[in-house]
Amino acid sequence: QVQLVESGGGLVQAGGSLRLSCAASGRTFSMFTMGWFRQAPGKEREFVSAISYSGGSTYYANSVKGRFTISRDNAKNAVYLQLNNLEPEDTAVYYCAASPLVWAIAAVTTPLSYRYWGQGTQVTVSS
Image 1: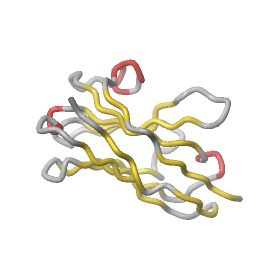
Image 2: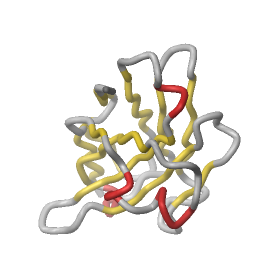
Image 3: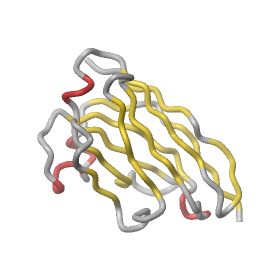
Image 4: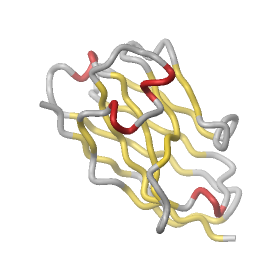
């Protein structure tokens, strides 16, 4: 069982930055692939980024590549998402999620691959 709690969201102007954190409970955190998804009003939940259990592999949606950076600290049971050069289109609720599956791009980009989800943190980018 893994419980996830996101923090770090807020209101920021376009071009600004935020750092999202996801704190995980459970001794097996280091065994999970971790992902970040987001959902804007009226839209489906979409993949943002994922990181392998060791942190050795990462993957990003094209829309955030070069602007967002995912990282994890297994000693602290935490995963992070650094959001730079934010755009109004980045406005959404951001969720972290944990997947027990081995690393595979087709899997880590799919919400159904993730077993545990946080409650989300709101990111609002003003123009």
